[in-house]
Length: 489
Ligand code: PNW
Image (cartoon, rainbow, N blue to C red; front, side, top):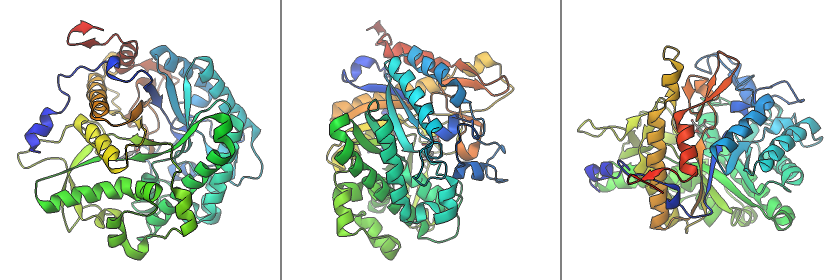
């Protein structure tokens, strides 16, 4: 398709309303434990790799950490009330593994950790909000990193399985939606290749990211099979995995650009979905990586198949992709793909407006395309969009009233929700959508310099919460009161 036509599909001028979605469609907001909880030394919590990483000089841009974060551990009731007030049906949050097993080894359950999540889950249920729980959102117990090298050692699969089993047993009577792992790609590539995320490995070994991914896939499948054999019938829930994917649009009609774009998608989604749906890594990865890719045994292959009830998709942005033999990114993972990610095309026009983060451009049509691609390539699985959102730069010089009026974020959500509604009409089986994020929070290596929240957190004044315009927009949208073509629905 010509680029000009792509831009026209940007959702511009489209108004979206709740009636554009199926009646049971779930709307929620999402967070992750290390980014919001704080209370790092309370409740007998053990240290995680993000505690040690954020306390290492030079790793976090503003020198901050999640020690206090936005103090959700103490303010969870207030936060649940906000979710309720805006009218969301669901809340996706993660459990901190080291609150349940402080050293990660599943010998003795920490009752204080269980109590905290029980309180949170009960507060949600009381307000009619469905919990969607992520078991692993990057905060591995530090002890497991120090003793076995984290995701590089196969024993991690067993430790994760014990932890997952413990969570199903304690919370599964009330929690019907489970996500094993958030974005295994980010852990593999940024944790074990570029080193910009914990555990910050950058050993120049081109095998580590693939090994870290391999063990995450097996950990997912093992937890999935435990859920299915021990809990699913009794508890009646479902289990999925969350993958992140930027849409990859070929930069031209040239065959090499088209295959570079398709490679890019296989290196993001196929890396995980081909093993889980077809039993092995995608052909293009096997060809290019050879022995660097670990192998699944026949028994493991069986375990992988059918370990997903749904796919969670985190999607923020898109790129044009061209074939390139010399890649500008300092990463073995990117080099193996022989492609370049492009923001601007020759005329100087950008793929979309930039948000605050360097990597985030606003491209609503990319979400429609990635949903249709998954539907086509993987036999139309149930999909939940488990994260979608954009950030503003932290800026002390602006008056609060101006910061709270986040017009660009409202525009972002309208465009992306319209793209989801279109993908559903196209035939994709999308069941839910979660905005990232409920609150401004600790944005990993970017610290507190980037704000993704629907709710502003005043870091200088006792972490007071102030809803932004986008939160009020969502609340009107969810009540069905958003205007469509100038008319109230
Ligand atoms: C997600 N990318 O990560 C994480 O799940 C969240 O914890 C995080 O706060 C959020 O995105 C915003 O950054 C990603 O560049 C970050 O493609 C960046 C990318 C993908 C995922």
